[in-house]
Image 1 (cartoon, rainbow, N blue to C red):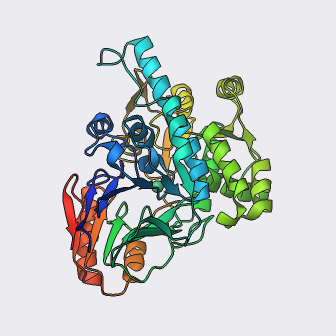
Image 2: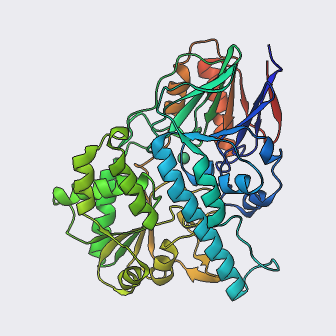
Length: 456
Ligand SMILES: [Zn+2]
């Protein structure tokens, strides 16, 4: 038997971003996810801190999926010396490319803008990483199908399983010596719109589970009804409907629903613009991997015919400057950056405009502030008065709720020694811990940042 195994949470402990879990076993170091901290400033500054172990000593990274809070730190890890394989599914590899390139661009643009307008408290604003660092990162991606065993060492291996969260998302089942640990990654609901539900697994000595909705149940509202009423509301006011959109999955889900509504003639024939290069590219990834979602090739193509994809800045400006009624999907989903800020700069002060927040809004993001009803938000170095109507959808979620999490965890046999709870704000994680104890009677522990947990 080799030396003891341990896991250390280097992010997504007490928060929902910055997912990084270090597994150490037999002299090997494997990082499960390598995400960026987002939201509150005290979280974002952690992206700049020195990595707790030397990046060159990490042997491999396994990505559960391509969201920025799971893959967005990779170029920094590579910049600082990591040179090992980054294991993931084929759609995750394609989506990670899109997401990292966009992230580098946003960081470069923000640093430039901050320097140009002098609204930085630093001497000179610098990006966390650049497109060059992304270029060094992408060749390290290694693709694997679901249920394919990947050997990392003689007695260390893993396989990926469907997580039902976003295209290509995975649960990681890892075997070290004679023990098994399962990392949930982000788990989807049991009725995902475009995917199949998370895979049932039967056995694990240890489980690391997300808990983003560990204290909540999703309301029984249908997303199609919510979107319909948002479109009708915007139409009634003759204004613009802005949907800050997560480029991956959420954009495709919304386009799919809007297409259905148009087809049923339940909404007027208002033009739908997708002003998100990343959203357009992610839609292409859906077309490229028809076997990884439930839409199929034909419906996927039909869906794309119903939207106007904004291809360049010139077109974006003309969409922005026209006052005719329209629906605009633009990134980013939590209003932390991207083209949606330009639409909001023009329209957020107008009561005739409607903003539909279509997903989880992390603490500290502008999306969360708007959700909570602030009267002004700051971006581009200025405060903007919020007069537009802000609506939040509840029927669309890429995440399991408390019931789903308990159902998924309850499928394991009773040999599990401990469940570690990460990827949740403290209230959510602690509520899930109580439920796990009461309902499943399994020992559990809320993840603490930087603390090494021995796996006996
Ligand atoms: Zn995710």
